[in-house]
Image (cartoon, rainbow over all chains, first blue to last red):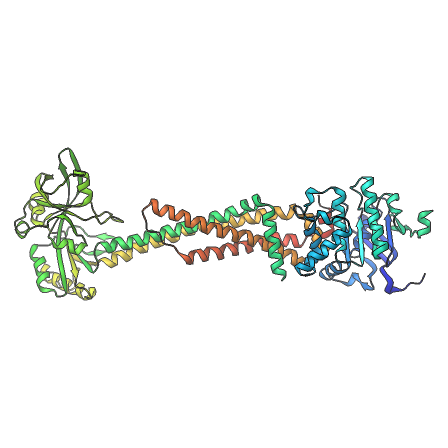
Length: 238
Length: 401
């Protein structure tokens, strides 16, 4: 496999994340190397405290490493200011959370429009693109419903539509099915898979459940701040 | 563009939680409402004082015994004589009417009714000087004035109290111990800051001096200047004349004083104006309290919406955009409260001016001031919560329960 930097979305070089000093030093990530290429669907697994959340925060440009370097699409994120990282997120990254995090008492359409508001997209365009994203997740008919009037599965679809609407280079999903029953989980996973396959969106997903992880093209497993296995696709299915 | 979008978001946020938004605004509503009410009522009172002092008569000088001193008059100076009145009439130019008065308090009785009021001995010119006009009946005849006949002209308040609906003209009433015939009734002038100007009984000068008060003093001489006559010049002339007549030595203090009614009006409106500022200032404190209320609720709101803020930051909102959003929300709340407060204040002060029978004076500069102040309060007290929101760590905010 060639290491073409242009085609790698995420590239970690000995990334460290340490908290505290001396005796109480915690090594959340200890020299992690990781490459995620375009069009991949990577499942990230590992017990709590293994460093997978820290890793996700760094990939998502919400946090910066204390050591090593992180390149997002060839850009050294560790050198960027807080506002520059916010702009990176705005233009290239979509987030899906376990708790959906839709705005209360706000319609599905308005929720999906939100990232476009920050991108200064004009109102008419915003409407159209948000409707398109909602159609993609099969919720065009729920556009006017507020989060209180929707089921968990529907809310997560709205959240996915919100992450998709900007056509991000990378979609980060943090336990997207953690609050859903198995039938709803399967629907969400199938949606993510189709987005990955048909629209070529790169996805990184954290999950506890190995059957959810199997939807990905490969599984990265964390343990004690290190990557235990980079899990090539054939290993996952084995 | 971003400001407009933020403004729309803020409006939506205000609508999303109507009840809380209203409670947040309430402090500002009350503050602005109180300021507007206080100032409007104060201005009404000022205007009423000005108007009612004006009702004492325009272009009028009042000559009274006793030196003019700050805070009151020295007692014991001798009163004026009838000769003083004619001297002023004859020797000072530019005068249209002179009315001496001798006032005393007396009980007036008719049938079973009795009232206590001020009885003023004077001449027919008193009506012109003080701006009264005769309603029914007649004025004093020359003979009655000359010999001090027991006749009287009633103010409408006294007339109503004694006679109700009956015709008083020609009836005999008792003034103190004197029996007195009613010859006329004044037209009503209405209430004023100095009390009821219709609560008066007028009698010929000599009648009061000899029969009611029992002493020959003249308490005051009211002088009305011709239209266009300078009151300062007139005042100087009267002062010179009186110094001579009363034998005041050169360099000695006058034992009388001449006052311009306008000066009294100015002094009184200065009092009500400073009272208005005082009340307005106290009300402004409640505006400040309202601002603290906004800050309080906004801080709670930031805590409550921590996850929302985290989500916005994750989606790519800049810290400055989050700051702006919460600042605009606070300003929208406070100015909305300001607008409602202006409406409430105008309504309240209209009602109050009707109840207190004061003129209703709208003060647009106070409204604009209150509106601007409420916006400033929003910015001032919204800044701290907004900064708190903007400085949240997105990772921790997203984890917040």
